[in-house]
Length: 76
Image (cartoon, rainbow, N blue to C red; front, side, top):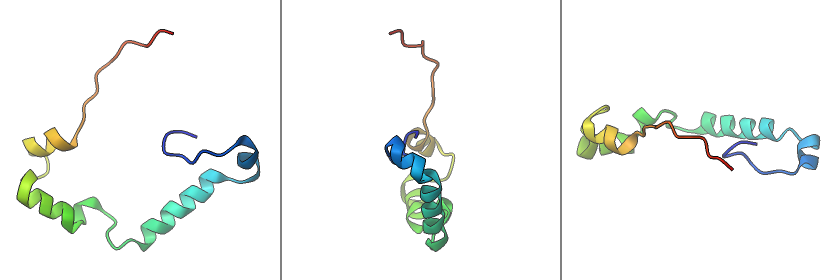
């Protein structure tokens, strides 16, 4: 029941495999999609041509990527 997962009560989770149903639905949507890879998406291609220049460019890295910093553990 991590982030992005449907919230269901323990009673429902005991009776139904919610994760399997979600996985089956996602695979079904993917199989039916005409564009299955982001780098083949015509809209993404156009954004790169007109604005981001190329994958890995400074602008693409700056706008599309994130970085992480070690943080101190929060003390309660």
